[in-house]
Image (cartoon, rainbow, N blue to C red; front, side, top):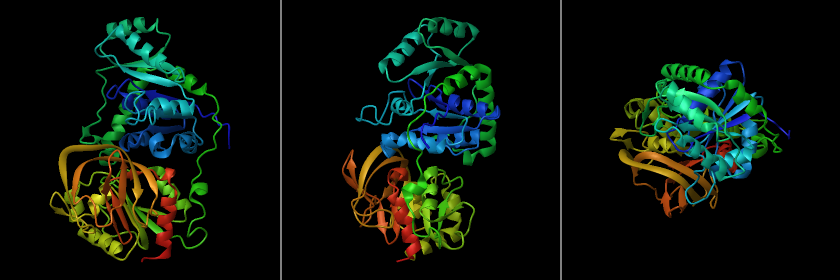
Length: 458
């Protein structure tokens, strides 16, 4: 299917902290409550915001990251995720023009907006300015003529008088004001060391927060004007991304489908929806499990995927679930393919802050004050259950923990950018690393994992 004109908006800001998540999530929820089918998207590698987007819309939150997946996949991934939607809302990352360090516009909200031919609505923190807001908006509107800055939502407005001054200033800018939100109307969205607390850890409170955001946006924004703006977009000529075409007819397609268990629950909330779709398309039966509560792996498990999350927060509970730790260790010892990223890496270690974990890897983890954050480029140093030797990937690191040692005798990756080092562990069927990789950019990872599970343990 080509020539698809899904109504769409990009919600951006001059910088982080202006209120993008508040506005984007509120808009998603408000439009969904009005009866529209809303498709939620997030620019960049963030896992947490898409959880709130999913709660607001009832659809999977999807990431659009041009660094991890390549600019050529942005529109196809968008069309895949937004299929059947009445409206797509894309939340930006950082400031509108901020991208991967040293890579120009790559992975910026501006680049994604251009790739999607989508209008941008700028959320401006107006708390400490009045007439200057027009100069700020003028600068962002004129910086890149290919970016269509189609409207502004004023956030953290102090009073009616303040709003009047801001609107008067904006009258001469040529950019319409599509909303004004008072700073006293703040919904409860608690944060901690890696950003917002994920939905899975506070679902009841998060539901109420999203309701508050929807009410706030309904009161302060011109929803009709925003929807009209979204509906005025051109068609995208790209074909939607197709996991079946990407993964191919994998081992198990049409026959025995190896069961691959995927960790979830409050401790393991970091995952991209496309991963499960690729595993399924490659021939696996994907079954979720919760390491906080399930004492055994799903019956018949022949492979394991443990993504990112917050095992350091739940270390006591994870450690107390000794039966599951033993089951994971036994599966790994039997040679089953195990893919572990970041939180999964820590869970497979001997300990987190002194609390016993699965003991699959000869390493120990601890919390630190240092945030490790950024894009990475890496190459697989050996053949393993996830990647063939020489496979080159782009990934992302995001953690405040440290592992000692940081690499095994057979490392998972050789980092090539921005620094050269080895990282992670390959042992038997286990591939464990801090690096988050988006498999849509390298679907062979899913095919190889399923093939390893289908072939039996080695």
